Length: 193
Length: 293
Image 1 (cartoon, rainbow over the protein chains, first blue to last red):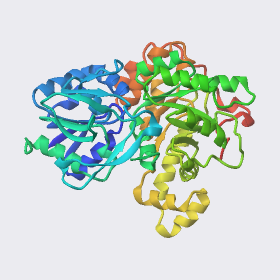
Image 2 (tube, rainbow over the protein chains, first blue to last red):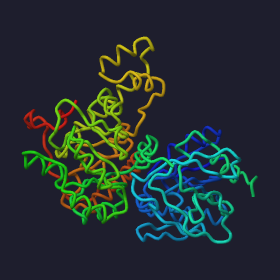
Image 3 (cartoon, chains in turn cyan, green):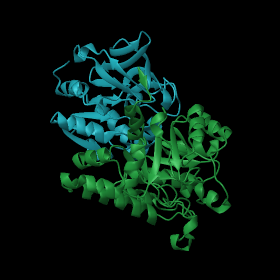
């Protein structure tokens, strides 16, 4: 199995390290040619405006959209979740429009509001998952086809799945808990449909 | 729910990796930087080249300028306080800036002590010239490190010297036997716990950017190839003849730093780079990198 990690800006090295711990071949992706032959793709945290600009270079965005139509599994964390969305409240970011969610950037405020919290994610088992939220977005609205995996309260969805697309507002790549990455690897494998 | 943890402080720096942080002095500059793909901006009253030219005492920027820039963009906004000036840092934290740079570019407020940065919820970035200085700042609570370089010169030579010194320090520490680590910590003037941790992990515990002299896309890529996690560009963009394309080119070069064809392509037709200064022509008392310890 080969999973690409979009490496134009942000915490891509951390995702590569987490996937390698799961004994998955993980490769940085900076140009469209590097998307060939991938079974899955991770869009990491970083600055969504910055990543969005760099995705329009060399039509990397077009390449990702094409592969998503052919069922490429994609996981987006934080900025990556914003880029997966159908709609962003902020016109500065052009999302890829793949997942039926509407997101809000910097939903909790500036850096001094960034926080850690233990999360209940039933899909990962009973043990709480360490949630690291850094200038984090939230999912404001999700369509019927989207399964909520985690919410902080009734109106704040922070992790969701739509078939082969997986999104989190927090940063599993900054923790030692590999369950979220394992969940994605299982989606890539097709064993959790 | 816990805010201001070490994990969220160092974590924001991890999100900035592979990116370019640009000095800006107006909301219009900030918007140009954001549009060009900057991962953060540094809000200032004057860029380092102008601070150098003006002389006198350089202080924290007017909060009005910082707030206007915070309003103008959605990317993280950093601001500088003087070395050791913990009240300027408190004021910046109250304004809600996303990162504080305790910076040698401003005139130091304290020649003996840096700010005790663990007391703050807002994270700090600090400059360094070698590994010992980096570990001293991390020991005080810096959640991100950058080379000092020589700000406002458009000359990359000092940033290269400092990045090489940090990387060389790491390589040497990794191969130093355990029983020599205490002597090594004494020699470096660095906290033993951090020396021991680095000896085991082989890498800095926080993100390390390049700063101080980046003026061209090739400068940015050079620093990335030398091991920087990302790049600060101070005067290099808005002191050049055509800031917008240069900003975009430096962002692209930082992402594609291993691709010489892309570096060559983005370096075309950028107009005049900022005027450069030969470090040897600067009187030693005017060198910014020697501020702090």
